[in-house]
Length: 379
Image 1 (cartoon, helix red, strand yellow):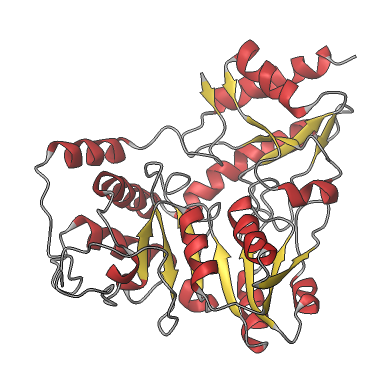
Image 2 (cartoon, rainbow, N blue to C red):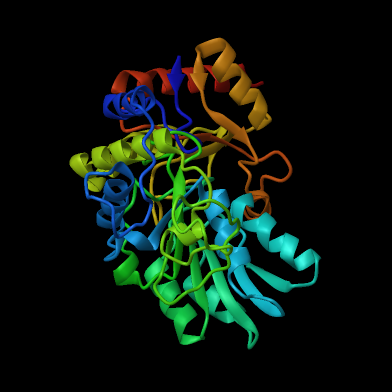
């Protein structure tokens, strides 16, 4: 099997990640005081926050709270802010982890939502976002990088636009964390959601949210913290305020090892490897009469090769790749339904190929050969 669906979940994981999970599961559970400031630096959860802080350029590791992934983090950010009776600006490249929390609040009459158009590669001009801001706009919720086409938005400029208009900026870094440089302090980001199971090489069910100091979100959940048990309301100590319940220790161990792997390899090295593969795919098929490519060389992570075979539904391509060639890719809407019209792919979506840092030249060549044969199959 050749796995080329790393935009969904990365595979394989580095050996260091597997070893960390095995060690976590084979070690006697020890419940620390969970007091944050009382922890010793060698504890895995603190070590993981420190590594994430280094990766994202965050001064205080305790501004990063753990979650089950970007979906929970974005729900915490969107529902935790006081957005009632306000407008929120987002874009048509968003994943359902942004769209659905926003639309749910809109449907019950708490907010209004404006989704800004993108071009036919999934790129959104910062000026278009600025033009969408109204007097009652309070937040901009924005995808750093599209999970469909790989387009990359200028978060620094968009953050400046947000703050100059008195708005929060909430960033979905699901696709960029571990693949693209992220500078939370330098870009002045208010809230940033990330997931662990993609390019950070962690287990599914891991991730987190960065919360800028001074922003007080309402927690999604309250409950046990292991300390201050006599207090009948949720302790406000960071990061416990947002981490009620038993932590996913094996997951955090996997994330800690995964982020360490990313830091040791270097973001540029990881990104360049993926970009070389996607560039090769684009150049190979850019003139093919039966291939329509949606991934652009401009404003792009080059982590996704997004395309369609003319005359075939995307699911047919995915089915043939898996069943005839043993190649796992992704086809369909990719949980990003608002981008379909801009790409001209309504209602079926696209085919998406996303290589790993571990993808080999031989695997790429085999995929190219397989796609040629599938194109030949089309009459």
